[in-house]
Image (tube, rainbow, N blue to C red; front, side, top):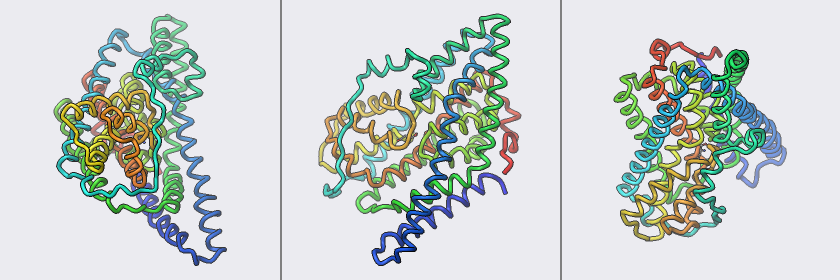
Length: 426
Ligand code: ASP
């Protein structure tokens, strides 16, 4: 059985068994031994631990892999000056896709009116985090201490440092050749580790989802059904219509093949709700399954995992309209534009980790003068939406990376077309 099927079966089992556990646990008359077994031993014990270890082993690869792979990519650029154009294209496409994503979300949200008639009674409350100024966001891209940047997982800083080292290696003659070769070897070793980890995914995914669903079940959806439906529809249109159209128009490549090969990566993103933790898998998929050369992928993928969050932007667009409608406040056209710009900026400099989209939503709401407490209305269903939008986030990263690689003549069409390329043997 292939890996995708095994992960899917693990997911389905986890959701069903986890939800049954949640229902049992919420019954006050449940036998105490059974409660202990289900809660302390399984959901909060064994599976919680396995899930945490699974995510940790993905995350531990992120910084070394981004650094090594990007140094490799940059030092092998034949023409270093092409890096400028490469970054412009990549960032440009990331911005355009995010802009399209929010516009789509705003359009669907005004059509579906998810917030009209919503009752404002909620027990949850929400406090906005302190805001970082835009100036600071840009200054923060540049590291003062590479080790600190790596230790804190500041991805943009790690990217800047890796690019600088890669550029220097490329210009350092034979010394550069020696170090460059070592980085190449390290890159292969780390990629091997990613492959090994992937083959363990079904167990990790089961553990993660079981303990999640055993604890929170599907939540009370109530008033939020239309909100969720709007977010999910916008995510689906973006992933299955907008991306395929862009890919087909700009590269002529088959969107079906692309989506098929993205499945595993999307499942990782869904289970971990973190584009950052999924980064090693995305990078591997883009290089080994979709055929993008390391010199483009090593730059575009990590950059995307940090600055490109189309799924998140979609949630923010719908949430803004939802909250405005729930509080019966009107948004003017300029507010919509402000939402587009702020949501785009908000995703730059915030790492792709679970739930960060809600935090930056506060920023968006403040910009258009909507009550930040509105976030409390949607917090209850955010986790499941987070999982779905993270899958869209990583799909966007991969689509842009493949498109840029194609335009740079750095895409191996034979690998892209070969269904078995880079497949993980289960
Ligand atoms: N969890 C998302 C990601 O990692 C970010 C978010 O929308 O909260 O891409």
